[in-house]
Image (cartoon, rainbow, N blue to C red; front, side):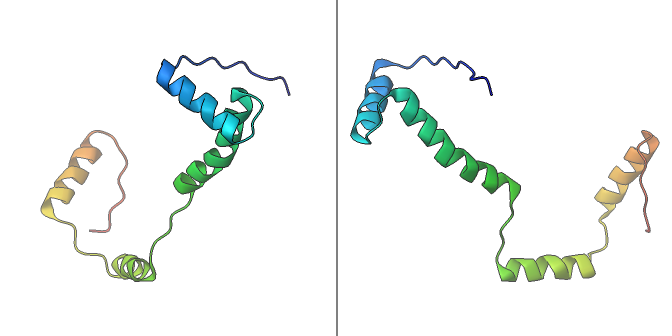
Length: 94
């Protein structure tokens, strides 16, 4: 895989902070330090957006709401009618 070039402009304070952290953590370059940070942090960030974790109590409330949904409000029904008149297909059992 061909390596991509990535350039960044940092203010002096941020650059010095990053260089110091890179040196103290044993990295031979700022590039190596930033690469390690990305490899460690990016999968966690991605996972947070790809997975949903809820408590057992909230899951039970969700299931109960799906099994016994409340009747739609008149405001919601009016919005459905508007969508239908705009040509958006809406299937209802109301």
